[in-house]
Image (cartoon, rainbow, N blue to C red):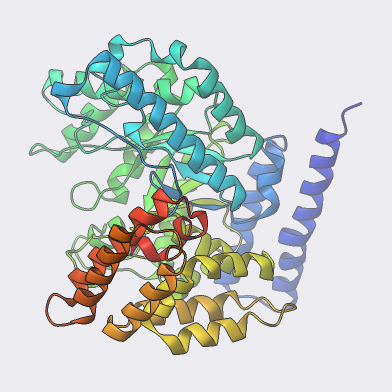
Length: 493
């Protein structure tokens, strides 16, 4: 007898007691207000979906708020570069070589995700270069069948959920039938990617509605018409997202409900392209949560948990530009307000996996050893900016019975926000050079000393010279296969 379904039901029943019955009892006992009762209702809706489908990736249900992931590329993961070429160089031989290389990169990122407890990941659309055009003539699905199946099996064994997101030129609602046709072909390519990995319909393809073309209502209707002509294979994967300028979350929700398409809420797009007729930007968490809740009914059991996109505004760039890193206190304000709402959170941020690990480390106790692993990746970046913060974090992690994740990341963020000073930059570079000084060639030693002297000169070109110095150290780390340095963040910043 297979006990897995029975244990899943028992697990779900216990979760129902802990997450719904107890809070409901407390709410009524304390004479709760409408907001508290709304939170309980959200828990009930989330757990009801879970009980309806207890066999779906049981281990992913350990966290009642879903999981957190990142998009496409990874920082400081050796061998994870996705490569491409120009169209004029896209011969069959070149494309097959690139596909093989990119599958190696995908495998490296999947393995990294498994090792770091990341169960949500967006695969790059460039996995198969020119996948919806030139490469369509290649039988890549059969040529690389064994590799694709193996990677897909790794994803499934880890209960990882992956997705893809076609770019801005995939415009399904274009009035130009040729453009809309190419969009459909591109969606077929993305579905073929996920199919070739052997993944079910919980692994999605994210798409924007497209252009307005002078008539928003007609544009939405044209999207639905063209959606209805897509293959069933694409339709069971497609989900739609609000954008930052044309279609706000109300537009997308209307379309999703009409066509029965799951809707992804993007918080930053909502902040810069709000529903308010006045155009007032309303970034309040409560405003976001209301839309997340309204999107929930568009998701069904066979779609997997509801997905949202989360990002933060870069303070020095145009509205809608993603921050370099997720500011942890700001994220936790948002995350804690979810309070039982089951959503998978895709981070859209420049430092990709680094922020994903940060957020995961701060929303649950993953053990002091996980913080030590992450500190090893950060330490030369912090030493470069602040000796004081470097020493303070080392002291913080000496208590092996503690879990000071939030304190550590606050110190990390504060240090990285400091301006680069010549002394700190030289000190960190010399520490890293210690890995090479006994094996570098005479030419490499002379070059390092020259670059170090240039960096030490400071002035207007000081930071540029530091970047050149770190680029040279990165080349040495690759040449001499110094994995510790290659997996750290210093050489990439």
